[in-house]
Length: 238
Image (cartoon, rainbow, N blue to C red; front, side, top):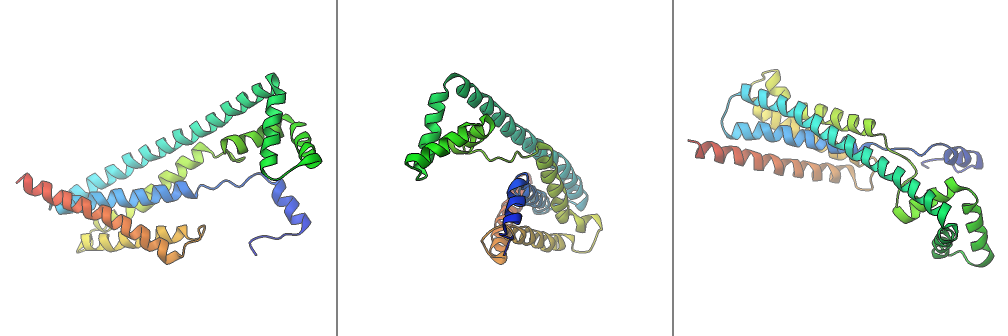
């Protein structure tokens, strides 16, 4: 079983702060890092340019695009927190100015869940007896906001670290100057795509190989488009 269901274990688990997951941020950064850096490799290779150009453009992309994604994720996550704070203040104001109307909202929420009669009134009374509990319910039911608040800094750090780590993979053969570096880059990046996708399955219902193949196909398509674009541009430029 995933966790115990003894009264003590349940009490401890529900009493602890909500668990915050940054898996989405890591997967987002890892896939984008691999795809965009490999797109640079394939695009430059398609244009038949030197390994030195691949490294210059690849590392520049790794740092600039990685920071850009991390900054965007930071600001987006921070905006989510600020929105939740604004909604909390709004709900508190509604309770202070129109408690009866807000209490009716709670009554209809519980009625939709199947509460009736005395049970319904008892549930409404218990929830609305405490403003914090009351507002938490309204934020969850009316606005769909979770209790846990994601850290903007941790979300950005997860995105940047995954982007840098996974984005470095396509460049490694060129950094260590192995023969047939492009072929090695293709193989290593394919493995990275598959590994990132497979890692997702640990928290999802899909099988590890299906998730891996899905990510591999998506990354391969992006790489093929970049390689073709590089080849066409090189020919057009003469």
